[in-house]
Length: 576
Image (cartoon, rainbow, N blue to C red; front, side, top):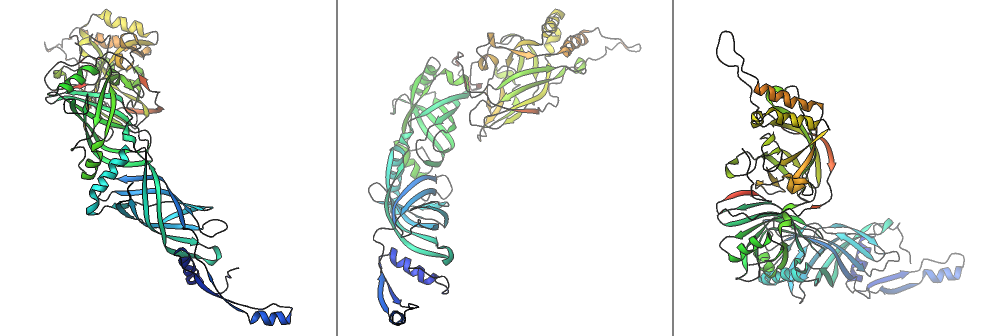
């Protein structure tokens, strides 16, 4: 049979036929003969023919199955405690009677989510969303909508979260109705409501988040509460779930019981996507805990396995707090995390002395700075200059323990996106103490520079922010930690013919005082200005290097007083 297009608006008729078919109702039809041209007696007979019949309903359910391709759930919004926002991508297999596939172009859902026991967890009503049909399947991504949990289902919902956390595969139920828009071509589009849905679908679970790796530790702080480590960790999410969990706190210990408890691990604004998740973690090893002290001591001597587990203070969201109470995973802490980078923080230093350097001691330096902290952005705010707490100044030295030669200015700063690099030109200045050295000391450096480079030790202790964390932390990027394969941390620094100005500056600082004819007052000398404007200038954008892991030794801090210490080694003595 062919449905004609010239008989006016057939939308109500077609909508009624399809609605009856999917709801198990036969549609009565009358077939009136229109004739058989060319044979008079047959034409007369056909015109008098009137058949009473009906279109039977569909023999099978319209929606045979539903596969959940992916799902996003937001537990952190203000209204998400008992109504997390959800977005899902689904593919449904249909049994619609179309020879060339189901012409569904839009879908919306009004369904209940059932747990593994068939109990209602919550309801989900989604707006219209575009759909793509292929043969007998249709795929759509639903807009964000809340999964509303009834007051009486809150314990069921919390258990549902806990089961998803532990499961490898979780079977849930989908029950309700779907509305669709069918594109019938020349006949137009019709809306068919109330397509029944009652299927089970499998969702990949989190498997207890078993794989957690500490990639890098960029700062530690010894304070009155204990030992705090700021680090980048990788949480592997084996599921197809994207979860915005907000801030979480886990317990950490040598075992998952009261005797093994050693402190806490805080995860700020945690959002997990399927696969790799490089996120910040702040670990507090509590000083009053024997297990906390044991972990702190053991991690600097060799690998130590620690447990991370949920408890009744894991989340401010009560549903998550209950659901993640069963979370239990392990990871390894050792000294390598303090000298592991996704790329070296710096490379390719060049120095350019200027004619004005003779008087003010200020010159230009150029280097490529890379973000060493995996998928986190960084913002270097300034160079640490308050040395009263025993920290090392940021400067080039002849060796780790000897006098500085060239200093960074205080306001040295830059920003780097995740996995990025920049080549910057910035200002440095001569360390004033060099002017008190014998002239042969400076002559020696000038002579070495004639080969095109000199070898120096880099002490670099900037203050920076990592990712979206507003906390300012101190890091130690000294060259023996960044490049442990070098001889005593000495790195090449490129020089040119202008490096001879170093000796001119020295002579200017040490020339005899000139007496004015009318005065006995010595002419003043100009001291270098460590606070001269020095915002680095970006000149080149480069890519980062492969992951670098080093085995530089790390010492355990022994001071009991609060300190903000970079995550590598305790300060070494600095020669006056």
